Image (cartoon, rainbow, N blue to C red; front, side, top):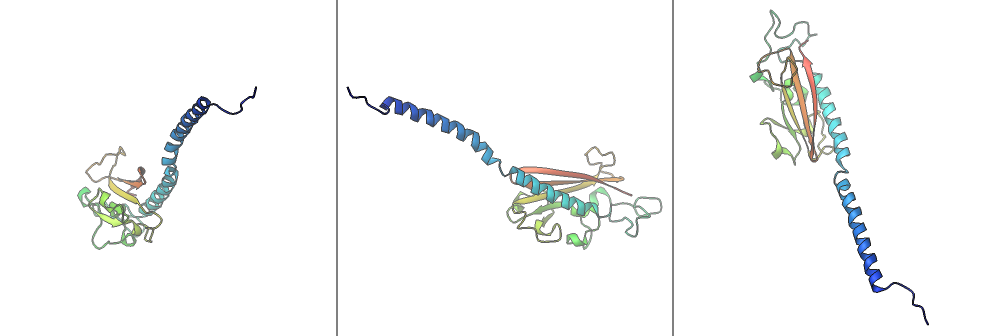
Length: 189
């Protein structure tokens, strides 16, 4: 009697089904990982952009009416000019570029790239290419930055709607499908 070697049709079908189930299982575990694989890159770039911008903003004065000659007299002190009212925060006069910005609230607005302008929440808009006073459009394509500044003397994260000694600077960076926030306080000192 001759022995046959190989697989029967039923054994072959069982192997194909088992391999199919294994492939579907492996693929279902890998697909979510591929979808979020760029998140770390966006997170690193967003934090770098946010930190660079925050450094630039915090290097500015507390208010438009602050003393720019050494800060001996603070706005709002007795005998000094009052600080800007909450409704007056934002760009003052001829300050059109970040190079001309002289206080923290001048940065209020949406900083966008060509592809993200329509997503801006703020009515005040600037191209992201100018936020650090250099062309960064290519490095941060599809990024958008929303900057808000308001008085928050008790540091509870809620707008006081009155002049105070602290301003909350909040930067929200939108990169990819994620949002990252960088928050700091600037004191009137």
